[in-house]
Image (cartoon, rainbow, N blue to C red; front, side):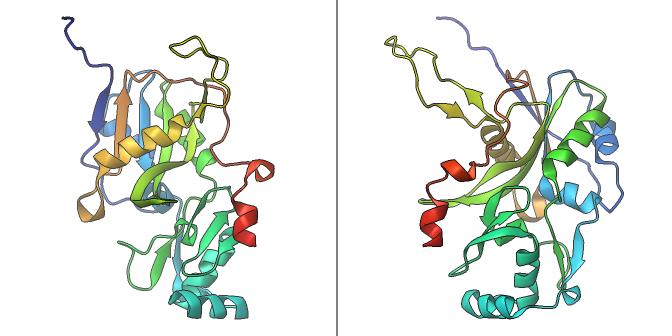
Length: 247
C-alpha cells in the first residue's frame, strides 16, 4: 500500500495584536510568518474592517420611517437597522430578520454588520470593497500569494453558520469543471466549484469563534487556479431565488 503524504499544510498565525485603524495587516502577518509563493492567506473580515476604520457609532444614525417599521418587526435597535439599510443595495427579507444584498454583492443577514467585541454603542461594518482590500493585501505580501477575506454566513435549509469568501485576489473564485469527463466518460455540464468559499469554510474551522479566535490562517501546497471564474455572487439575471423572495 502506498504511503499517504500530506497534500496541503495549514498554519494558524498566532500573536497578532488587536487591530486598530491604520494598522498594516500585511506587515503584521509577515512579521509572524515566512510566506512562500503560492500560499493562500485567509483573513477574517473583522480585522480588515478594523484596519480600514469601519467602526461606526450607533448615535450617528438617524432612523427613517422605514427603519423604524423594520425595527419593530425584527426587534432591533432602529439605529442598527438604519445602518443595515445604508450598507445595502436591496432588502430581500425584512422579517423575521433582515436579509440584504450588500453594495458589493454579498447576500447576508444584517449586511454582515458586527456588534461583537466593539463596545456597546458601536458597530463594525464589513470592508467597503473586500476584493479591493484583498488585492491591496496581496500586493503588500511581496510574494506570489492569494488572499481571501472571510466572513461567517448562514445557509438556506441548513442549520449553523459556515465561512464564506466576501473578497479575494490572486485566485479564481470558481473552478469550471464543465466539459471534463466523469469516471464513466460523461462530460460534466453545469459544475462550477466555489473554490474561495471552500477555502474560507476551512479557514473558519481553524480560526475559531468568539474571544479565542485567531483571525489569520495560511494554506500551503494547495493547488488552485489563479484566473477563471470572477465571482461567487449570483448574477441577477440567473438568480431564481430573489424574485420569489420579493413576491
